[in-house]
Image (cartoon, rainbow, N blue to C red; front, side):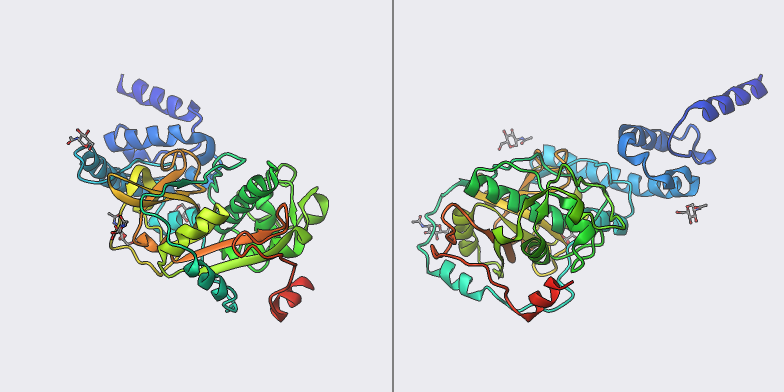
Length: 376
Ligand SMILES: *[C@@H]1O[C@H](CO)[C@@H](O)[C@H](O)[C@H]1NC(C)=O
Ligand SMILES: *[C@@H]1O[C@H](CO)[C@@H](O)[C@H](O)[C@H]1NC(C)=O
Ligand SMILES: *[C@@H]1O[C@H](CO)[C@@H](O)[C@H](O)[C@H]1NC(C)=O
Ligand SMILES: *[C@@H]1O[C@H](CO)[C@@H](O)[C@H](O)[C@H]1NC(C)=O
């Protein structure tokens, strides 16, 4: 009888076509049953990862899963009791080990080559503008495309550049387009594709080479061996992007408010930690987070205040199941460095005016380094 049972079980296990290999010792393990439900829930994407065919790997993923499950359950209980201002949920990537999780979800690092601090003058312009009245609420978060999902490629630098450029095309030119993130991943040699980059370098790439249609040159979740720039339909010509802007705000939130009121949206680079990866809704507060250790780029597109205080409205690139439909409110006070940097491109708008200075812009290359890059 027992033999028949074991035989039936083996047949069952062999026939159920799971993308993951179950470590034998966990058959009938309650913790593993929950982990299996998690794996089934995310089978559409996780099944593309061959590592789950390895039972040793699955076992170590279960360890991280259980650690996050406990941490998140405790946090969620505290949220229900109003002891914290934001909620957390398990996400598709919750079973990855911390190092890998940060690598695939983030992907911002300061540029390899020191760049001239080009835009100090703009900070002076912002400082000179009249103060933003208390209580001002600004929401410029109208984007032509859904919240992107970088999946398992650490290219937040590219995702955020593209979102800001698409936003500008919509607001300044009334054009609703989808541009190619994959082009930046494959072709921008000044950044490191899925191993991270710095957004201003991405804008510089666009300024020199223009951008392809995102539908032709679609997102592949990995760097491909060839740059297909020459094969696509170009949507944005290099002439169209006048300049890349980067301001080191160092927490000057008054200037960041003025900037967002005038230009609508900009890329920020802040420090995301493991907890940030599982936020679902609410108001993110973390007073112990470093303000000068950026590892993740996102888009700021508004600000305001609610019962928890003043916040920045931030749009991420982790799909719409993260945060509140892909967005989060971050407490003002330069939480995690959200107001340490702002980056954006200047495009030729309706009247070719710089929206900040009101002056006519012409295309220039900032320095000799840009010209070297142009020859590549
Ligand atoms: C299976 O996964 C373990 C843990 O990740 C790893 O050390 C091992 O090399 C893998 N085995 C194979 C055959 O890939
Ligand atoms: C939590 O706060 C909300 C709004 O401030 C309130 O409606 C709710 O009753 C509070 N819940 C608990 C458990 O205190
Ligand atoms: C605006 O807010 C600041 C900080 O909260 C406060 O110090 C200031 O008095 C307020 N000004 C007005 C006009 O309400
Ligand atoms: C705040 O940030 C620090 C540093 O990144 C991190 O270790 C900690 O877990 C975070 N705290 C919360 C409550 O998210």
